[in-house]
Length: 126
Length: 182
Ligand SMILES: [Zn+2]
Image (cartoon, rainbow over all chains, first blue to last red; front, side, top):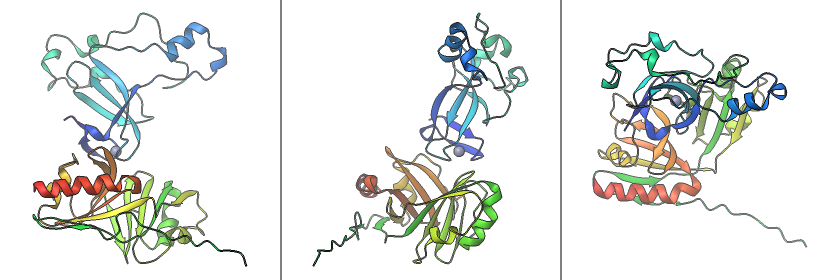
């Protein structure tokens, strides 16, 4: 069983208490009515689905019930870090990969998360 | 003469118990319960009105005079009163913004006691229930089997399980089976 560190409970708790809530830091436009159909599609449907590090929302639904964010490696399921909702997206290159899984061995972390070709519409702060 | 209908309450699982194998289960008496949500600004006034200080540290409880406040989340507490008090009424005069909901009859409480109490609960609860990780007074919302519960450690070998009334039959059955495996 995975142990996930809840930033509100301040300890690692079993994964059964948590629920994934999709990709994190997808900012809703401050003027959604003015969005083009293409931009809205990107905001609403298109997700990065990387092979490697992804930023996700999680909810400690059977614990403190709070939403928070996590950086997780989709290859190994390793959680690199978790942080409270509303905190800025951490710089992934600053995360230590020293204790990272084997899959990290030959690639720097910033190359794991290949950016989608279409530029995401992220008006406003995530 | 108009007929007056008098509702009689029938608590789920009233009086049930299981013993032996180093663990005993007992369905506890009905209690007053309140689900409390509040921002930090209202916390001090609510603590004062309730007569029990609302804990700020995760997974902790404060108990005073038959009334316990369990930390469930950063702005959420479960208040349990077993002394016949009415926590909802006590909060009514507090001016600060808060949400207090009476959930007395939503929950059923089961006491799990004995040297095998932790092992019995761990049959369906994935949390670390060692005394280091879950000391006396620790409380947490968590899972038991396929349902949610609130778990409170009342002694080294004693726990109080709070589950929803409609889940209580499942919880009691689950614990009874787990107790037999002990
Ligand atoms: Zn939590």
